[in-house]
Amino acid sequence: YPNVLPTITIEQLLYHTSGLYDYTNNIAYGNTTILLDPSGIQIPDQIMENFVLTSNFSPGVKQEYSNTNYLLLGMIIEKISGRPYYEEIRDRFDLDTNYPTMAVPPFEIPTTDLGNLWFDRSGTGNFFVDVEVAGLSLNGLFSGASSTGAYAATPADVVKWGYDLYSGKYLSESTMNKLLTPHPLGLFGISDYGLGVVIADATCGPISYGHTGSIIYTSNMAYLPDHDLCVVAMTNDGRAAADLSFVINITEQMICLYLETVVSTDEQADTDNQLKIYPNPATVELNLDFENPVSDLTVKVYNQLGQKVAYYSAKQKENYVRLNTVDWANGSYIIHITTKEKQIIRKVIKQ
Image (cartoon, rainbow, N blue to C red; front, side, top):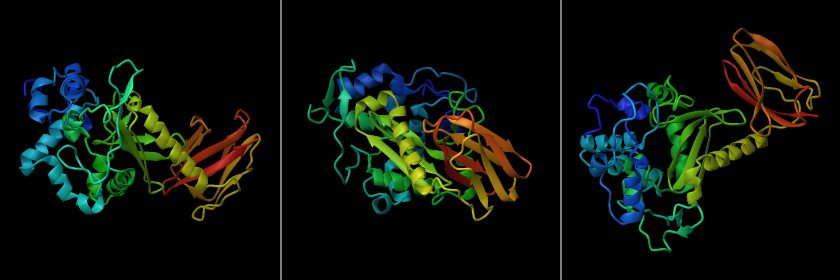
């Protein structure tokens, strides 16, 4: 293809360090798939020829998300397997048994009804229509998204997929380590991003693995390894596509609400290290007392808005930490404690 260097590697595609222009940013592509020919089937080869413009940067110089990377990866799967990428995935992961609602319209027919899509066809932000009621086809939208993220499924099946993938059901330990290792450049220079996976701290503390997705339908999935928990938020409201923080915030609210249900405000003891947190409620100070010394200790404290209000770390062995709480506003806080052996989440009150 004219704007794809032959030296780009598969790893660079997965890491988004290829520099390839994101075809979904091309206005001509959006006009074709949504406005001019919504019922037409978009072919990846034609998308690469017609809508991928000059590269944004040389491979390996930056890490910037581009859907073109995933489109090419799907084409590589098809070249190697000799069949459509979605057929290879269906058989390889036994979707019919494990995730029966997963399908790639219009090439596969979903086993459950697809939620009607509400979309601002005018582009003004004031005129939203039910695409199905308006008689518009979604063929162009889904076929154009292709292997960049055109799967339809129920939240339950997406949760199960995320849980199975990130808990290690499908990949070896060495591959999982590679998958979850963030590129040193940082996505857009600010975010941790592995091989096709967002690595982030939830606002209330714990680390999560997952991804967002939007082809006007919008979703976000996050798996918390420390809690063996997977959470998904999905919407058919097209307004969410303009601001992915909508589904990200819903996901994080669900995570934080879950964590609040599994911790209490009483003094709590951890059975491995006999951790005591006192006084709780706190007034001027909060003490963390480990009966057995722990190493590689990190303590993060978050308020109800997800803002970090305190941080402490130590490489050497510690068995006592004192936090000054004088400047904390009254209310509840989440303490995220990481040691070399484990992670602990606790809830405390400042009054």
